[in-house]
Amino acid sequence: MDYLHEIQRSLAGGRGQRKRLSRSELREARWGFAFIGLWLVGFVAFYALPMLASLVFSFLDFDLLNPGNTTFVGFMHWRRLLFEDPRVWQSLQVTFVFAAISLPIGMLSALFLAIILNSADLVGRNVFRTLFYAPTMVPVVAGILIWSGVLNPTTGWINQGIQAVTGLDVANPSGIRWLDDPRIIYLSYTMIGVWGIGNAILYNLAALQGVPSELYEAAKIDGASWFQRLRSIMLPMISPVIFYNLVLSVVGLMQYFQVPYVLNGGSGYPEGTTFFYLIHFYRQSFQFLNMGYGSAIAWLMFVIALGITGTLFATARHWVYYAGERR
Image (cartoon, rainbow, N blue to C red; front, side, top):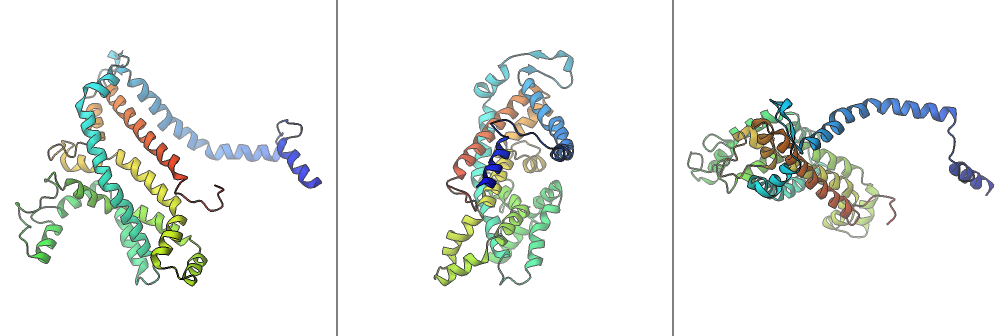
């Protein structure tokens, strides 16, 4: 008991006073700050200060070509953003509709493939793991251009494959136009995204390999089926990684830009269905050089993304399981 009291006094610092660090502890703390110092400098220089500057710009009439003519306009950009610019709400609608289609497909595909790649019965597991991860090593623009050829209505592999299997005459200019038909354009963009889910597969695979095999063996002895083991053991045990992939996917979809910009220059083709929110931000900021209004657009998306991720974190305690956590 005296030993426990001594530990409590050392943690409390004695009579409520702050514990003084020893010389070795001070040296260890200095080394810790030294190791994270470069990261802190980079964070402040490349994240914190630019974010603060963009917030200030949202209240200014700031032109990149004429920075000397900058004037304070107050909430004019925010009023235009929220009440006068229909493009804002159009681009938000496009972004959320695409996210509602792409997010579940991408999450389920990564989880399904990870489960298959984790199976001991799969022949050539290492080869398949390499093949599924390999697309993440391809530069983004190169991958998009590759898919523009794959989805070509005349010479693309998908239409050629459909025609070979079904006999339907779809490999021609009047066939399935994956990148030109507004009814299937989001499905086409989702296919491009699923091609690059190697990182999500890797995270899920690592989590699956960390599940204790004793839990599966005990469930088998109790007569649990594969689906019961999936629902009661596998998914709860890897739920932190699923949550991690979910947050990354949501933030990534809110910033969706590269695919529509490379394929159609951010024009919104076809029929405005690819006019994503970040396309609107890019056009205002770097094509029209209206940096003040562009900053306001960026901050609105930041607030929306922050609200969504905050909601996810608030609800995570109801479905994310952490081993050893007290409820």
